[in-house]
Image (cartoon, rainbow, N blue to C red; front, side, top):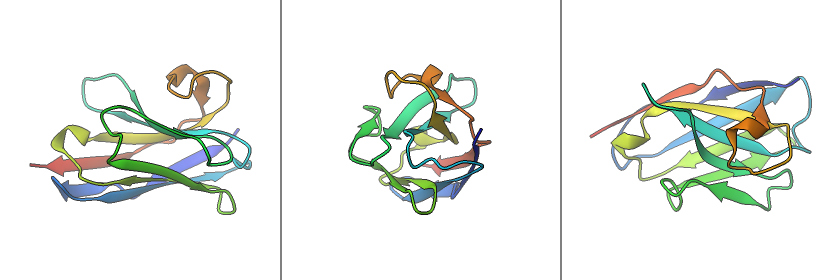
Length: 124
C-alpha cells in the first residue's frame, strides 16, 4: 500500500497557474504509473492526466490537453501537475492515485490508494 499526499492547491484567477505535487510514502512509485483525477461538487471523479513509470508516456483529458503537464521525479517519489491557463471550470478537488492494475490509463478503476486531494479554485 502506498500513502499519497497532494499539495499545491489554492485560489487563483482565471488565466493563472498552479503546480500540484503528490508525494508518495510506504513504497516506491518508481515502477508504477500515476494519475491525477479531479472531482467538482455534484460531479463524478474524472480523469485529468497520467504518466507511465518511466515518464516517457503521458496521457491527458481533452479538456486540459495543452494547458496541463504531468511529470514525475522518481528520486523524490513525487508526481507533479503543472496547470496553466486555468479556467473556472477547472475548479475541483484534485486527487492523485497509483495505477495498481493494467489497462487503460484513462480508467479510474485501474487506480488505487487515492490521496485525500487538494482544492483548486479558479475565479473568473
